[in-house]
Length: 200
Length: 200
Image (cartoon, rainbow over all chains, first blue to last red; front, side, top):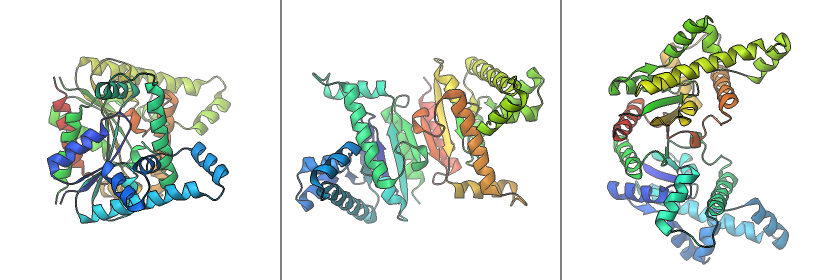
């Protein structure tokens, strides 16, 4: 059986496309935005809210919410979403091999005995900028460096808060690939080859 | 042409064996201990001294040496060895594709325009201990945890001192492989496949 494959990815590194191509080549289910949809449907929270709270956080957000609401309403909403995402991911992983993007899935899987391949996709800033512009076009009125930095920072803070591990530390993953130097096609082939080699 | 492949590795992760097997499969020169031999021969320093100074350092060593020798003799010897290793590595890389283990080679190569694949091999403590015992037998009178920790710490400090980068941070490598979960054979195959895909 193939392993469950989790992907963590830097914004603009091509991680989403690589993960999707891997799932297609292996013929296994793919979960990224699907996790948001499911949690939004079950919780009644708006999709946008789940998407933001389900993978991004900042100490400022937390400080602000703590002071504004006192009653920890804000933290509780994020924690509730976190738990629902975790349940969703664990349920899917138990059903069989699949590909899961983001949302600390690598961390959850470590605490199960399900065979897992934990992948981290990253790239240097220059390549990520080029990839974002190629995909979405040259943005107007947006500082793209700042936008990448902000997205990374939110994901890092979220990951650190919920796992107490460092995002992007090689120790947390079985395989880390830099797409500045390794093409998306080669990255897909590597992961597929490895998943097949792990199929016992 | 294949890329130059640099290997950084945690002690006991199987990095040396993997690097050697990759060089053999690609039919390219392999440099690990060979770097020490060459630098020892050229410098007149003892091999043991080059080996220790050429990849390990600690803040205590530096503090002790600074206080003992005042004249920075110790730092100068380490810096001289560092420079000789760097020259050796750059010369070999210019000659053509090869495999180089340790000694900040990934960092030196970044500053050249030679096509490079920078690999980091790591594993969790439990697997590294098992691998060391399998290879060298159960040690007597040695605390193996302490010994692994000390070796890692020395390599980390050396890398950080000379490159100002964090050892084991995925951002510094094209490919990081955890041999706790991925077998040595699979790791070798991945790297060889990738080197061949990068052969243009």
